[in-house]
Image (cartoon, rainbow over the protein chains, first blue to last red):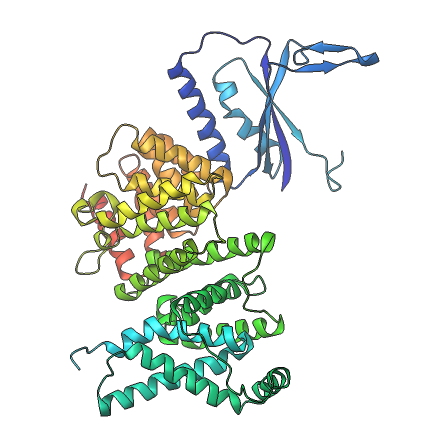
Length: 119
Length: 411
């Protein structure tokens, strides 16, 4: 069993109005998705959501800029770590992620580098 | 002599306390000797009381006789002689008899010490459960074997090895302190949780025995709440969980011993008194912060004590299962989650969720899939129920599945 990080990427500035009911729905979808992975005993870490407000990035020559790094017009807003037999299995989990079903987001699947898995 | 169960009741209630008390005083390596002394005491009680009548205070009689038997018996024991010699050299020759404190505080304290010793990490969890039943709950070997669905020989072996381990590790009957207390308390709570579940879910045919198991587990958790050094929220959430679950104990089975599923239970048979107590402990648990798996399980159990299917009931339970599983995986929680998923989103959506669990060969997995396929795909439902029937261990379990199968073939 290998471990993979599922990294959530969303487009820059997704500050559309979200109603409380939609937020509730969104939370439920996330919980169901995570619960589903955990129910298969495949969740290694429930990771973290990464904030947008108050974030900075430091570039060459220690130049400090505001906000998450958005060179590619999207930023990372969180991650979890799962275990799976293969990258394909991890990818199947990613396909169910609410960030994709909700539209607009992407999930990057990256193997964790360990002494056994060091490609 | 109007109490036909006097001695069995006393045995169940006092045996373990007396053993703990003696071990606290003379060392846990003397456990076998302590058990012998207490057994002798009961034998002596049976004969003496039979001849001369039951004393006014039978419990006091037992403790007094056990104490004297201990002091006399252990005096002849080599190890004890060495020890007494040591004590004598320190204190001077007048104090030949070591004291044995028979106060209620001392008895409670010795039980707690024993509980923490039994849950020593050197002992496998299943042996901890057996040992707890023997030396903390006063179950006979026969009863333990019956409750845990195994043979007396197995239980005897388990107990023997566990006691050997305690001796080999030089375990002392002290309450651990600081970080060690925290770690050991985790083990204690898990053992008591398993003890309760053995009683609640066990396939053992004896309802009385199963109920006793639950009651004993609750008594021991309650003992923890009374100790001032133990202030952890999960002690309370575990106790709340047990109260909520136990409230349905009588409603889960009809007079013929058939299992009654949750949806078909008569709510009026749910024990409101236990639910109220559970509420009380749960409030205490939530006051103390730091959510544990027992908090989520207690919250789930609380929702099950609600008789009305309000709109938020099943979605909330699903959310709680999600959080429980993220915190800690267990197959039974995963299966329950899939069932609740069906309650919220319907069978068709729940089927892939359940199948992803891939718990082939698990009785509850196949029962659940049989249930979910009912009304969706009768052939698959039938297949799963038949697999489940082959896995079912008890008549009560089989009866439920046979009923489902006959409904399927009738439709």
